[in-house]
Length: 613
Ligand code: BG6
Image 1 (cartoon, rainbow, N blue to C red):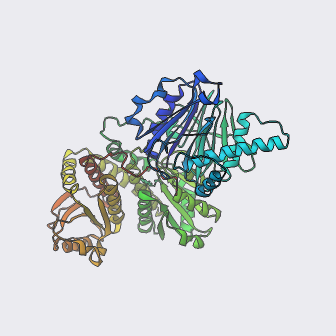
Image 2 (cartoon, rainbow, N blue to C red):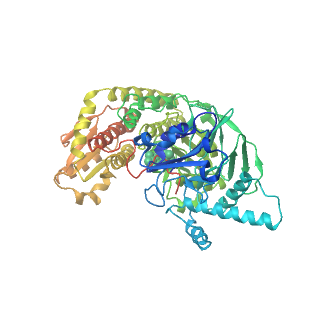
Image 3 (cartoon, protein in one colour):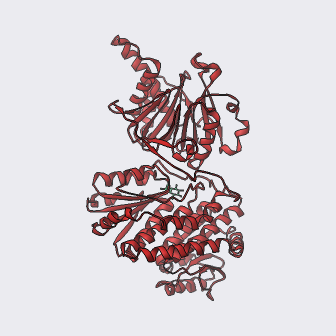
């Protein structure tokens, strides 16, 4: 979950790269760095060909002290890091220089066999200054260069021109790496090379300029055409874009596809944080779910109905959305759908068959844990559907039925509007399956209006801000829900953990009396989410049980109840009640994060898109 970026063309590379990295910061913001071809020294000795600068912390805070900004350069690469191997330090920040400074390299991924590679390189006398697995790739390329050199001399082969030799060395080194890796390399002659296996890499192309990045959003304002690299492909650019298959070294055609990220404008538009802006976009995303091309669903619904087993799969918040989608498929679609959390599916591998179907909701479409499962599912000929927010994603590209949420960029690491979009989509899909798509659309259109009214009533925010102040002081927070609200309280748990760094625990209301009740005592906060549904009385029973032991009960529901110590009123939206109920929980987590002075859009230790296992 790092972000890599490269540029070559008429614009000023340091500025373009810095802007690109800022748009990639959601992928990690522990440190960042940029390497450019220093024009004044271009063509001179390797020593001065590349200028490189690295910083700890998020970009936004430090650009003023960034000296490369004063240089004009047409070519460079950049990286924003989420630390996996090696602590957060300037030494461990990318890009990393080769020993002779003839090239600089940045990586997004994990070299799973880096210890044995490093051991072998140390034996051969290579030196390391950082703790990263990335530096091992740099030294491995250097070793391949020496080997190539020797080989050419031995076979009295014509010396490959510098750029070709480096490309060949990168290819040879990349084939020895295990794990999901994507690397970008800047050579002192201004050539940029990049190789992909796992973590995403997209190339934006215009006449005379090229952008390389981990996502399309980071260069969207500048280009209309992208080339999306597949695993096992390597690209090089030195005025001309060449693509090869890494294993065979065979040239490949660069197939470009058009993108139109109209809403690629990425700013807070007057909100204090992206998170609040994105929550306020919930009505828009719900209406986006309604305004879809339903022809796309005809064949998909047929496949869904005849599938032997239907699995929904996702990680983190998307995993909870996957569970709610399965819930709606069971309740409204009468489909025996089952959700599995992306990282834990080993026991299913033997059970998957070509008669099964898998549905993956995902914001980025690049989550490694889920991609790994989908790649196995593909090998077993399962039908795959995805519901992805980021255009040009791997999940979208490997799906038989790629659906897009069109929710616009979600910048806050904590997913809010995309989660809402995912579960609204699951509800509508279930209604389409049951032949009630019109009813589903009417309900969602009504829901969008109700959410909009809810969000625009200051009283609702005042209640939640007051509650946030109270809960921000707590060590442990319990959330109770059942039936349609079980995943809602689980997502409320995730939001509170991510935003407030407080331990929260979302549990099935019925389970409470079997274990969690031992923790109930005076003042323990229990947030209860209720709908006017079949489970309501069960949940009220659980509320009375915790009340009897002194807990403080916060009720989120359309009707007050004598057992509530605090009451958060939400409108009753019938079948879509659970989708309405997530909004106050998202706002509560937001106001707790603000109350605690946390970095709301970039909480500590997590990243927006986890493209490594
Ligand atoms: C986590 C994010 O790292 O990855 C979550 O913080 C997200 O918000 C999860 O739900 C899965 O990511 P994606 O892109 O597959 O939705």
